[in-house]
Length: 313
Length: 252
Image 1: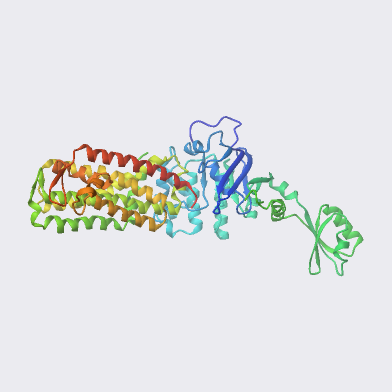
Image 2: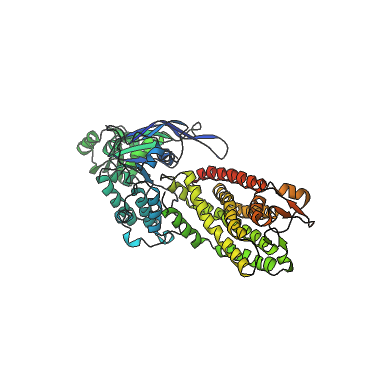
C-alpha cells in the first residue's frame, strides 16, 4: 500500500448525482446512469444488483476512471478515480476481456506488476489467487475459472483498499464459483472494501453485508441484506383440500395475492403471522409453511416498477 | 517504468508475430535480386555505389513494414480488452505508445541488420559514414510508422482495416521511391509523403541528397527537406497514436 493514507473519515466511495449518457445505435441519447448517489464506507462488502442494462458496469467504469461522467462527481477514497488508480488504492476484476491469450499466467502478472509503483510480490499474489501451480500455463489454455482467478491476482497486485468486481463469476461452474468466492472472502475478512456487481442473487445474499439495487441507472433500494429481504412480502403456503374461490381467499386477513400449485395454496402476505393464525384456527388448511421472500422476489418487486421508460432509454 | 513490461511485450511480439520472418526475408531476397546481382550495382555515387543505395532502400522498406506491423498486435490487444486492464494501472497513454515504439524499433532492426549484412557480404560499396549513419536514420524514421501501426490497430479493430493499412503502406512506399524512381508532378507530390522522407533521410549519407528520377537525371534534395518531412510526420502520427490509445479503455 502507498505510504500516505486517506484522511480518516473519508468514504471508500462517494458518487453524487452521477450521470452518464450514450448515443444509441439509432442516434437517440440513452442515460445509462441517471443521477446515481452512493456512499460506501471503508471495510464494507457491497453488492450492486440489477438487471442487464441497469447501468452497473457503466457506474463501475466511472469508479475506475475508465470513463468520465457527463455530470455529477465520483470520489474514490477522497480522490478522483484516475488518481486513486495511479496510487494503487482501487483495482478491479473486469467483466469482459482483459487478458492476452498468448501470455502465460506468470508473464501476465509480471507485466502488470511492473507497471505499478509498489506492487506485491508476484509469487505472493499467485499464491493468494491459488495459481502457483499454474504459473507457466498459457492464458488461452486456462479454464474460465482460472482466467477469473488470474484477473483477481492482477487486481491484488497494487494491494488496493477498494476492490471492484464486475460480474466476477459469470460463466463459471459451481465449483469455480465457490473457489472464487473463497479467495474473495479472505480479502474481505482482511478489511478490504469490496464492491461487486452481480445478477446472481444467491451470491449477493451469501457474500454481501449490504445490497444496492439498481434499475434504469438509479439506486432503487439500498440497505443491509436482511433488511432488503424483509422489505418485501413473505409467502404463506398451505395444503387446503377443496379451498374456496380466489376472491374469498383474497379477503382473508393479511393476504395480498393468491396463487395455486395443485392442492397447495401460496398466499403472499403483508401480515404473515396474522394470516397463519387465522388459517390454522379457522380453516381446514394444514401443513402450513411461512417462507421468507427470496431476494429474487424482493428484486423483482423493486425493479418491476422501474422498467426503463422512453425518456430514459 | 522499468524494462520488464517492454521486454515481455517484445518476447510476446516475436513469439506470435509470424510475419517477423517474412519481414526480414523478403527485403533480403529483393536485395539479392535487385541489388547484388545487377550489372549497374557498382556505378559510383557520392559516397558509395548503387548497390548500397538499393540496400538502404530495401532495408528502409523492411523496417517500416515491420514497424507498421505493430498494427496487428495493437488490434489484437484491443480485441482482447488488454487496454482496459492497462487502464487499471498507472501506465499513461504516452507510456503505452513508447513501449510500442520500443518493440517496433527492435523488430524493425531485424530487416535492417539482415539487408545491410547481406550488402556487406555481397560487396555493396559505401564509405564508413554510410554504414554508421544510415541504419540509425532508418530506425529514427521507423518511429512514425510504429505510431501509424498503433493508431490503425487501436482505431480500427477489424482485420480488414489492418490489411488496408498495410496496403496503404505499399502505396506510400511506391510514392517514397522505394520500388522505382519517380518523376515530374508525382515526385513533387511524393516529397510530402512519409516514406519519401524516411528514404531520403536514410540515403543522405550516401548520396548527399541526389535522388534518381525516372528520366535518369538526378535531382537534389536539400537536407532540410527529409528532416522536416520526418519530424512533421513523427509528430502527427505520434499524436494520433496517443489519441488512439485512449480508445483502449472502451468496452469491447
